[in-house]
Length: 426
Image (cartoon, rainbow, N blue to C red):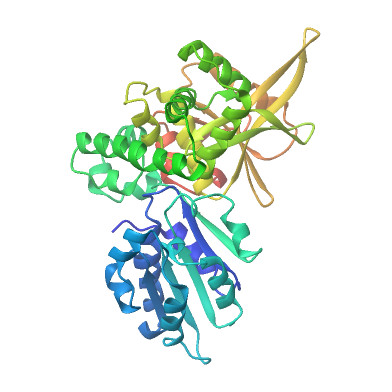
């Protein structure tokens, strides 16, 4: 079993918050396993009685049979699980005394599940954790369904530090991770061929299918072709206009900017991609466009391009973005205006990572072969007048060290394996 302590700690910290803990994330990232195995075992280890933990999976034939529902009839008639049958089942399990833990999987299959869960919150002695995996539940606006009493715990694919718990990834695992990503089934696959086939199938038959069905997309081919262009341009500044121009140039077809903007939102709502906007460091304001697009799982991105466009510089930046988000940082692209020879220019810092009062400036550099390249990568750092840590991450093994100016240089693998490295003095 791969331990996912970061998420377990977030689930535990939600105890007693008085809200519905909603586990969101890309399909197939292990949300159900996190809830029904890892968190369930934690509760038992902490002395919670098994009778006080009510686990129910709305896609389980055995669980549905307990409340008198026939899964075949549900599927045939395309109807949700009867809420009264489920509520009667729960009522028979709880009393006014004691604390109970409601762990619900695939909860979107329950009739009026938002109404039911808001009702349970009023009882006061129920801790409610839910997850689901259809396109409606995966929508990023699901929190609003719980009238401000929902708390999201977003699950990312396996981080490199998690995937290296597997023996196969302990040696030369980083290159494999950069190609195949971190979906659990991919990590556990017995061969690279199986990994590639699984990623291709999931992208086509699960992720895109969900986006199409949820948003009633009519032009499926157009949607897929835009995703190809997005996948090809990860970690580059873009916006709907630039994407429209690229679509016209590559596909010889026109797509309206409004349509492109909608499609990008669809991909974000399904957690296939995420975006990072620019932040004017000196002006202390956000610049909404252009922005950068990253995939939540790099393996899906590579699969979409049939593993033909494995560009490690861009892939490295995508992996760093996902890692920073996994660690809980808010991540922006740093923009710094300068005037040079009477011309206005803008320097970029790949990532500005914020968490509370902490901030880190991070440059992703495939390599620093000489002093000239180091000067190029640190030029924006030199102009910053604050004391926050400045970091350069390179894609090779190197002894982590501080430069004469106090900038940290660290190898990608060391950074991914050490969650505390940003604060070390070395």
